[in-house]
Length: 587
Image 1 (tube, one colour):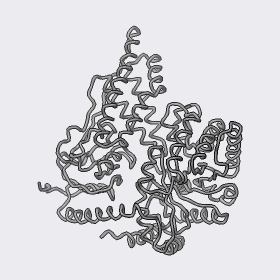
Image 2: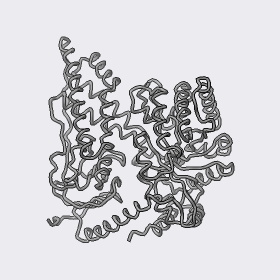
Image 3: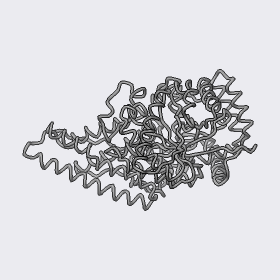
Image 4: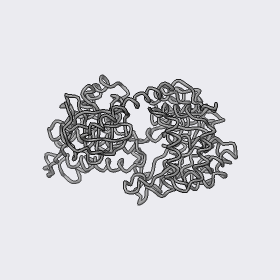
C-alpha cells in the first residue's frame, strides 16, 4: 500500500528501544474515567467497605491472569512487572487510608480510593530517580483497574490491534502493554513516558522499536497515517516522502549491521587497541537482574541501589530480609565484586516503611535524603550495615555511601559501621574484616574536598547525574531548563579531572556509575580523564565495550586534553562526536 500524499512531519522524542519500523498508525486513545461522588447512608457503610474489598479481589484475579499471559507470551522476567502490581493491591497503607477517608467523610468508596491513589501517584511522580519515578505507573494502572471493578466496567485493552500497526498512545500502562499481540505491533510510540516505562520494557522484550516523550503526537496523527519510527535517534516521521523512505531503508540496513557487530564483542575482553584493559561493571536495582549481569559479561556490579528493596515494600525490610537479598546477589556473582550503596531515600523519595521519617520539604533535592537521613536514624542505618556486612562473607563486597558532602559525615557513617561490626562480632556472625568502603562523589563540596575524603575512603565512585545537576544548578526534571544539563560543560570536565587526580594522588580507584558511564559517546572522554572503571545498565555494556575495543587509550587521553582546553561546550561536543564517529563506522 502506498503512503498517502501528505506533508512530511518530523517529531523528536526520546529513543527507548532500538530499531526502525515503517507502517500505519493504530491510535489508542484512552478515555478518562468519570468517577461519581455521593454520600453513603450510614446503614450501608459496611456494605460499601465489602464492595471495596470485593473489587480488590477481582483486580487481583485479573492481574494474576495478565501475569500468566505475559509469562506465556514474553517470558518470566517480563512478568515480574506484575509482582509490583500485586504489592500495590496488598499495600495496607493505601487500603487503610482509603477506609479511614471513607469512615471520616462518608463519601462513596470510589471517590475515597481515587483521592488516596492520586496522593501516592503524585508522591512517586516527584521522585528524582527515573526508574522509581516510573513506579507511579504501577499505582496508576492498578488504581484504574480497581475503579473499573467498582464501577462495573471493563478495562480497555489493546486487543483490538490485529493488523501490523505502529501503536501511538498518550501512554501505555503495564496491563495495557500486556494485551499487545507481538505479531501485530510494529513499534510503540507514546506522548509521555521515559526509557524505563513499561511500554519500553515490553517493546524491548518484543524486540520492536519504541519512542517515548513524542509530545502531542496523538493530536497530530490519525488512524491509518503512515509513519517511520526511529528507535535509535528517537524520531517519528509522519507521512514520510519517498526520499525519506529511501534514506531510512539504507539507515536501517546500516543500523542492523551495527547491532550485529555490537553483540559480536559481548564475549570478548574490554581492551583498547593499545592493550589497556578497562573494567566495565553493571548497575542493578533487584536481585533478579544478576542474570543480566552475567549475560552481558559485566565484571561485577558497580552500583546496587538498595532503596528498591525499601521502596517496594509497605514496611521497612528487616535485617534478615535485607541480608537474604544482598547475599543472593553477592553469592550469585562471587568472586566478582559487588558494590552496595547504602540507602538513598529521603526528601523526594517516599518511604513506605515509615512515612513519618520523612516529612514534606520545600526543596527536597537539597533536603533530608540519603546519608543525611541515615545518620539521623542510626538504628535503621546500622540494621542495613549489618546486613551488608553479613553478605560480605559470601563473596566480594564493597560498601558505598551516597550524598557525602564532607569528612564529618564520612566519619559519622564509619563510626556507625564500626558499631555494626562490633555487634556482629558479639553475635559470632561472620563478615569480611577487609571490606572496602567508598564514597560517592555527587555533591560539589565532596569533589572540592576530595583530598580529605580520600584519606578515609578506599575508593571513589562519581555519580554524574546529581553531580552535574548540582554543579550547574539545573533541575533535570524541569523541561524548560533540561537542555542546559550538559556533561560537556567546561566546569563539569574540570571537576571530573579534579576528582580523578585527587583520588589517584592517594592511590584510590575512581569509577563512574552515573548515566555518562553507559553513554558510549562520553566513554572515551571519561577514560581519557583517567577514570578507572565504568558501571552502567547491563544492556548498555555491548555498545560501551565495542567502543573501548575500537579506540586507543592514548587517543582518548589526547581527546580529554583537547576538551579541557575548550571554553564552549558545543566545541567540546563536536570534538567528542568526531572521535566517536571515526571509530564507529556505520556505513
